Image 1 (cartoon, rainbow, N blue to C red):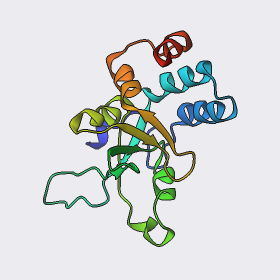
Image 2 (cartoon, rainbow, N blue to C red; image 1 turned 30 degrees about the horizontal axis):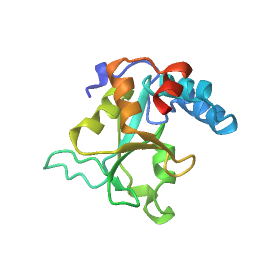
Image 3 (cartoon, one colour; image 1 turned 90 degrees about the vertical axis):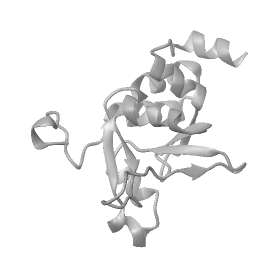
Image 4 (tube, one colour; image 1 turned 45 degrees about the vertical axis):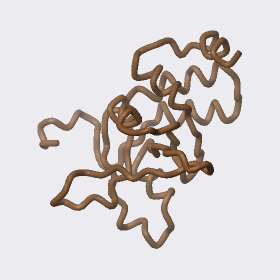
Length: 152
């Protein structure tokens, strides 16, 4: 992104504070209302994806992880600091992340057979089902009543 294209207030130390606050509330009060607030926040602002293994001469590659059943999971982070927490201490200086608008970062889930996105793997480590991410991307309702009806 060229220097003039960087939005005001966005820097290398950016933290998606609304998502982190909503995640903390969800962890403290795990109910439909707090899940809905978290999902609504997740689609806003910016998120970071891990591009550590990317070679400058080749296309950008997003680092992925596998579930315990071997399924693809897309790791996303609220900040570079959160990304660094997800790697061993001796590798943190080598970590590279790409900051993207949240919907673009979440949209990467459609690029492969991902079953979920994992937020902040080094700390809170919340896994969000692909169907919830797709609802965010499609602009579909993520209110408490809708989410509860989807679970039944």
